[in-house]
Length: 636
Image 1 (cartoon, rainbow, N blue to C red):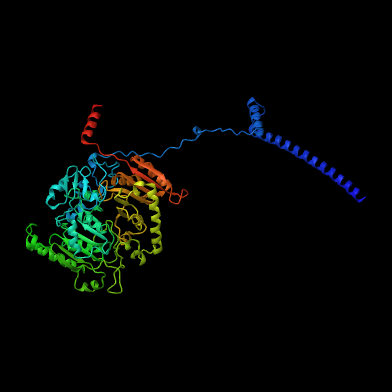
Image 2: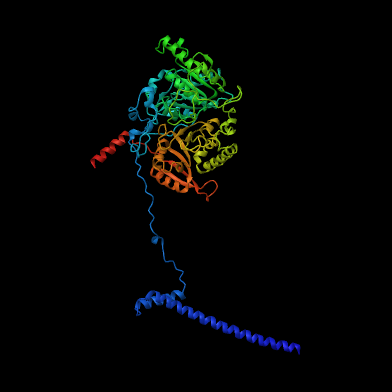
């Protein structure tokens, strides 16, 4: 009985459930029909609220609307032709310059220099074109230009077509500077004071001071000629910053650069040399014609600023060994003796010690600190120590007749500014300017991380540019924004040198750190031209350089300067924000560079990208071609 009762109740429950579900389904169906009819009414009311009659267009619209509700249309209704046209960035017009300008140096232009004072050679200093005078064209290579010889062959040879000047072969014929042979120049390695060759001359210096133990790594050659001294020091692991003015010795700096030797156009005149204080282990002058004893010893005072504590000054030529050379120099013995006495007096006033003089070479040494020098200011009333100036500021900074003080020390045996390790340990050890806290925002840990970072970046660069990976393909390299010199340090084992530039607009003045690593470099404002000849560099690297100079000067002008100093078939690697590089690429392609933008070494998700470019080979037309073109244009 219990079972039957349960079955009866279950049957009634199922009947109620079925009835309820049926009613609910009917209700939901009616609600759906009502919503559809109301939606159509609202739609038509919204379209025809001002109309009282139904037109054929209304009927068509109603039918299409109903169909749209019923049928889903997945067909494409737009093509690429329907997309709005985005205007491409303006491609600048950057024609080639007049063929006569193939050696144009904007800031050492001869015509412009004649407007300035000839006293103290001020007219040979940097005098750059102002706005409106900057050329908006590409400097051509001379007709027949060839890729330079590879190092070390380039030390001894350069193509005549690249530097078509024979003046020095005549003017310096008896001094073995340079000789012309068929289609090339040969550099025997001679100099005015080393007719036996630079190697033998350097051996003579090495008998007086130690050039072999790595304590001397960086040198500066003032009035370098064709830079044979610096060229032959490279085999001894001494890197030399050579400079000379653009003067009557036609193309001397250009010859040096064709040889693959670090060189700049420069002169000791009224402004500081573009190097930091305590930069060089050795300074050199071989008959460089600099009046060391004049202007209150100002030029020796400047050499003292850039010499490292304990550094050496090497002088050969007048007036050294005047007793044996006075007739050949066409000067009186009294005049030469007086000049040497004045140089000796200036050196003493700087607290330098004369180490040795043997035959044609004399060497002085700067003290390792200024403890004694400060005490003897009672004896030497001049020069006084400079007050309140930054010794590392050296961009259009006027020379002052005062002695740059060395950093303080607590002991007479201590080296001011910190003792440097010998080369090559110097390259990777923490530089004293960082370990001492002189650069407060840069720590030893930052330095070590930066060194490792650039090892990885340079490895990535070599994967992007196989010519950079090929040893010997590039010789002269430029880093436009060097920071701590990590790019150059990562390439130290390759047969090349890097000119490290610290822009004057950079947040940190780190050029002193670069020199403490045993590398070389200079200051530069990239809104102006560099003090070098066209076609100086085989390869140019720039890290965020265009972001740095945004709103400071025209991107186009910086790129044209890069094109001027880059050799045909030379390469460029720039890293910057992707939007910046897209704009750079547009201008670079107008300069006939082949460009591509590659991903950051960390992968494609970084905004910073890398632009890899190569300057195409092109030259000025040969004279006969140029005449033919002019004749054709005149006939037409």
